[in-house]
Image (cartoon, rainbow, N blue to C red; front, side, top):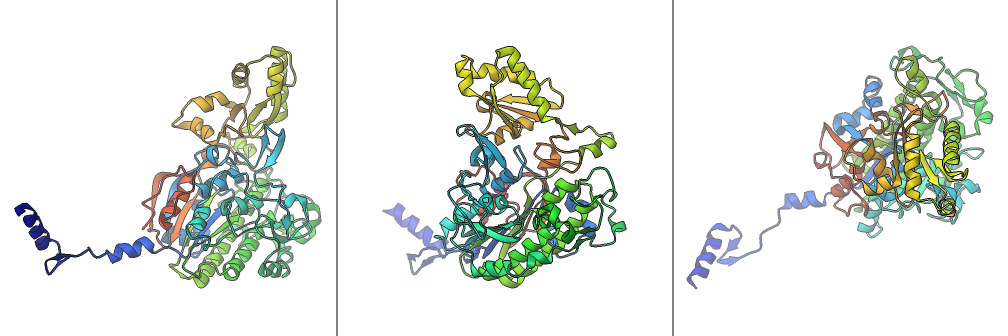
Length: 556
């Protein structure tokens, strides 16, 4: 009894919550309570398609103060941010940013891949069970059904009992659909050709909202069929190569890939309104549509966090056409800086400064045109897919007396004909390893792995880890090969991407706004860290397949 009395007296004397001899519950720390529940009204995830990290530093002095510089100087800059898998393509990139995991888990292993069960090539966002809305085109039947895991936007919808909205917007369908997730209210993408409209599919709705119809009827797309010339004097574009060179493709109907470009004249030979996609005006029309969406959808106007995903796809089209070192790329980023500033201004006005959180990253980088690299005596080259297939088939014919053991070669993966192997009484493992030992001897091949290696070995660093993170047991091939750095399967003009080299994996990652500290780091971060970081900021469940880490040094 004396012991209990002593404990009581100690609590009375030293606990400030004891009143009149009766213990009271501790009062909550109001400061912490506010911090825990003070969420942004809107999260904006921006992806710039084919943006290398060094575009931030290369064009920095030419940027204004209200776009990229605003995010860099008043937000948090992760300077050593990388993809942790290959292939570095648009579909896998967008899916990984918003799911917080790699293709190994979310299943978007490429833009297109070979379905080894149905014996057909499928598209990452294609869905024959839905119809396009706003277009009658069969090619626009799209949904996120092939993505196996949730996005942070999905988790936010679940957390808010579907009260928080999610809207995805891009020029590309996959750039709008995959980031928005499975439960999005809408995903809108641009239909070019002879239409020039933003559209969606019946996965989301049966008809376009009034504001989208009004935007499409406003002739905004027609207004961008104008001259594309440099924003500033071309002689000041000292961060890029010469305008006339041998490393760019250009547009059909124009002899040289040089400024200016009369889009109205070139339209007919370049698939109509699709030409807008391959100019900076593709970014501008996306910015126009985004600004309309923020107001029309009343994003960030209530107490339930909304999510807006935006993908600026035009830099990818321009990079593929003109290359990393072109005047066209420099002009594209100077103009994108202005469009980004317009979007930030609209967010300030419509949602309010301090009420939104934004991040900006990219779905992959790009390689300098190999022909240009070769001219500078840097190792690079071109991979001949047809010659590769002929040589490999000849090997299989000689060793197994069969010319039909290969079913498909795509995305640097070889799919074997399992039925034929069984008919010939061949062991899958034996044939796989024979191909590995053969292909490693081919020109421009750096490494080769069997699916058995991907399934049974565990890698912790190097390209092997990136290949393994991009390998999906049910969807990937039997043999995976890696080409030498700066060797691509592409034309000798323009750039592409897809490798595990730094020019493809190193991309920007900028955080800005509510809940974000100001600063920068050279610590290595990975693209799959974004979704868990945003989830932690919102206090919601992580995406169900997330394997990334929370970047706690980013959160204020």
